[in-house]
Image (cartoon, rainbow, N blue to C red; front, side):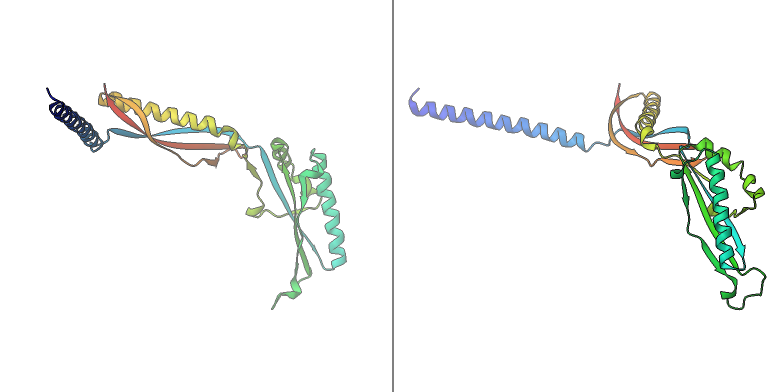
Length: 237
């Protein structure tokens, strides 16, 4: 074999190898594209986690009215009733930091157009608010509100003045509740896979729902709820 023949042989061999590599790579790519176009075998399931928790903050706006026909007398009555309510709250164990005083709203009956003449000219509405982490103390104090009435306090029972009990420690229970909801979703997927003769594969998508905190029939208890949505791949056994 001369030098020229050897070069031609090597060139032909390189061409064959390149062609073979191109065929193999094209085949692999085609198989991948074909597989990627196949319908996804998956199941989408939901997992629920629920808990009953105790409120950790109690708020009671003690709203009351004062009436008088003279501004000086009105101020005296306001200061006296504020003292009565504050002393009552101290007696229940609340501290100064847990008590706040609202700005009084004064209504002058004579300033109202076409007013009907009345004996009482001025009406004051004001609020003293308890905000405490001692939820039990707030609840017990509510049950003693008649003591204020007996001392001449005219309580205002409007809807916006109702006591509120809040749960503010959601971040402390979020991780464990999400884990619980995800495990419940996995159980549902495994049951579906068992019924369909397949197995649960990897997670394709997962969505965490919003946490909700709802009232229960017990004011100091709250119902916390979250739903997660997870899509699992299904593979044959």
